[in-house]
Length: 167
Image 1 (cartoon, rainbow, N blue to C red):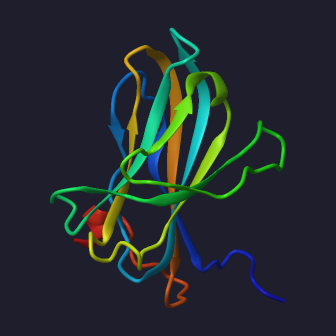
Image 2 (image 1 turned 45 degrees about the vertical axis):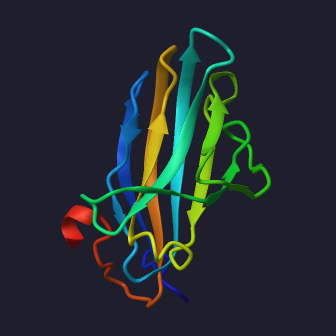
C-alpha cells in the first residue's frame, strides 16, 4: 500500500488570506528550476465594490532573476463554481497582454487555478509570480495564493521553490 502522506507535488503558500482592498498585490516569486509543471491556486472570499461592473485583473509575470525586469506571460486557467460544489469551468488560455479580468459581482468564494508551462517561458525567465490589480472602487477583496510545482525528478524532500530560498 502506498503512503498517502509522501507526495511528489510541492504545494506552498505564497500569499496568506488577506484583504487586498484596492491595492495592486504581487505574490512572492516562484522558482521553476527543475519544474515540469507549475500552477497557482488563487482563492477568493468576500469581494465587494462600489459598482457591480468593477473588476480586478490577474496577470502572471516572469523574470530571469527575481529582482530583474518582468515580462507578462500567457497562461491557462479554470474557475470553480460556488463553494461546496465540484464544478470547474473550461480550460481557457489568457494572452499576456490582457490578463484575466474577474468582476467583483461574480468572484465571491470562488477559486481560480492557473497553469504555467515552464518550458514555454524558458526564454523569459525561471521565476514567476501573480500580479492582482484591483479597481480603485474595490472595498474588500479577500484572497490567498498557493504555489504548486510538479518536479521533473521525483523526490520526497522538495528543493525550495521560493525565490528567496533558492537564490
